[in-house]
Image 1 (cartoon, rainbow, N blue to C red):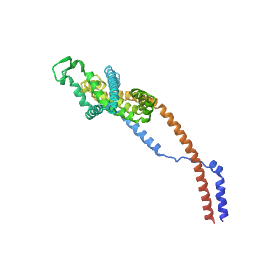
Image 2 (cartoon, rainbow, N blue to C red):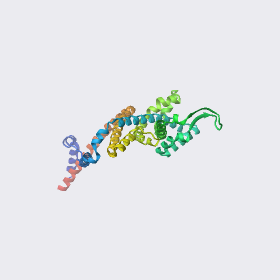
Image 3 (cartoon, rainbow, N blue to C red):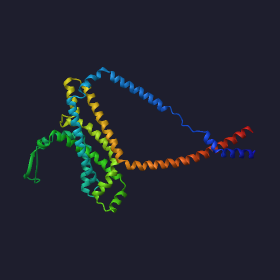
Image 4 (spheres, one colour):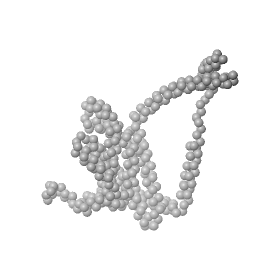
Length: 337
């Protein structure tokens, strides 16, 4: 009896090629994703059909004003505000992040207070105050503090126009948020990189420009893209200044004139979606650019791990097959006996 059992187990262990060639492991069929996809497609088509066929949306009015001169002018001013505010914000954010990492406690304290104040108050409130700057400070002057001596002065209305107030309000508020993003990116760079740069005789400025920032950009770019998209939509709040040339105000003015708010809201929404889509594509391209070296290392590492796991997986799978088949044959013989 024992001789027969041992021979069955041995034969099953020797039949490695027969088992691997005749048996194929197929993935388990999962109908869940297909069912979910069908349900989502049906719901999406139903919503799209109801929106298109609803006469209250007045799509013919949307088509008329989608490319009107006032709307296109508003798009231009919106993009200009976004671009100028983001450029100034990035410059301020890098400076604030460097101040937060400085060994000077005064610089760290100033940076902390700036971030605390501008993150702690609503952007709409800040825009209102910047719009009232000429009322609160009628003249801007340079002189000796605490005396009446003035070397130079100018009327605040000359400098603080509505456009300037909108740009300043948006930039200062955004720089407080971006500074924390920049600081997180800088701190994510391994300290060994800085030590290696010092060993090569590189100064702090050169190390920051040639070593730290290029590596930190991989982490900074994704949230920076989100903040840019957020800034695009935040420009609709500059009415608080008031600045009345951007896209949201332009569509609201047309809606108030023709008494059709819904179609003009759709016009503004469509243009915001188009611009946001373009910005998302640009963000993706920047992410791919700054992740080139890291992606190459990840691909090599992933390929090596897959190769090792495949080799180990084949060996362990064959061993399990042999063990299981031998036990099954022995068990069946015992049952038959």
